Image 1 (cartoon, rainbow, N blue to C red):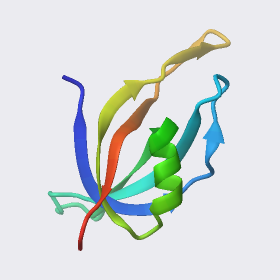
Image 2: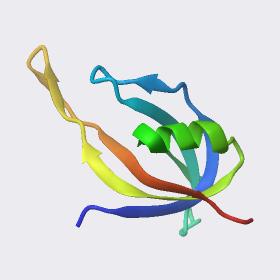
Image 3: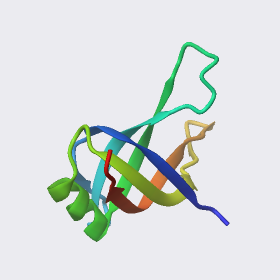
Length: 101
């Protein structure tokens, strides 16, 4: 099963957009505290993307600084260009719920 649940703080709502297929997208940066704090880096920041109606909801109701729970899936976005294979992963949100601090 390909699912994730993260609890963190919205660092920034990035520029909303529309895919080539006409689907609305709202990417955002999610800052998540690390459980293991033995390194100097105490947080990780992930780019999360919401699509369709969820993109509209995130754009209208979520703001930088909001503490949220994000549930979704991990998606590979591998592609080739000039005989070089590029690998990337994307966190695709199914739900973005604001939670009390």
